[in-house]
Image (tube, rainbow, N blue to C red; front, side):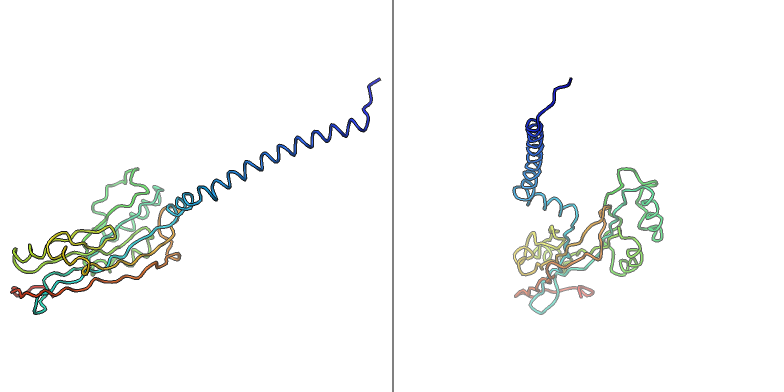
Length: 243
């Protein structure tokens, strides 16, 4: 005959098993809570920053630099807005080929692109053209509307009037990180704080291909052009000079 177990013994064994299961459950829940606390409290800033870096693009709209004028109001230094064209190449080779075919509507855009596109170009932002006049850039609006990965952005080109001596006095400018111009020497550097504008700042969400989602675009800060500087000296300029 098989020995029978008393109800008290069975109840004790069931209680032990429940205790073990409860302990395992509590241990598992504690590990999850610790991991959540690590991400939400201790590593929250780093985690959020990484997520935003992958999903949000912060861009700058460069501000026009102020002009330099002589005593009589003649313009000695001024900036002209020109445009650059970039293409965010899709990561998918088939999609990249289709977009390249659309770009072919403006052959000068694709003249410098290899055929076929190398595999290491997929997912890369490439420069198609730079220094375009505004009339040429406007012609690209329909193409930019059809291709979300096509970006037409403005930059500035500085012009100096006068002879070599006057231009040396005026000095040189360089490109700042926000796309604007910054004085590097001469009067451009001396009056940089006044001449330099404040760029506009915007944020936009990116899709998985790294392209903008236009409906998510939002302005962060207003653009402010730089101020003109008038010098206490008179400069003689040749005919056909600056505007």
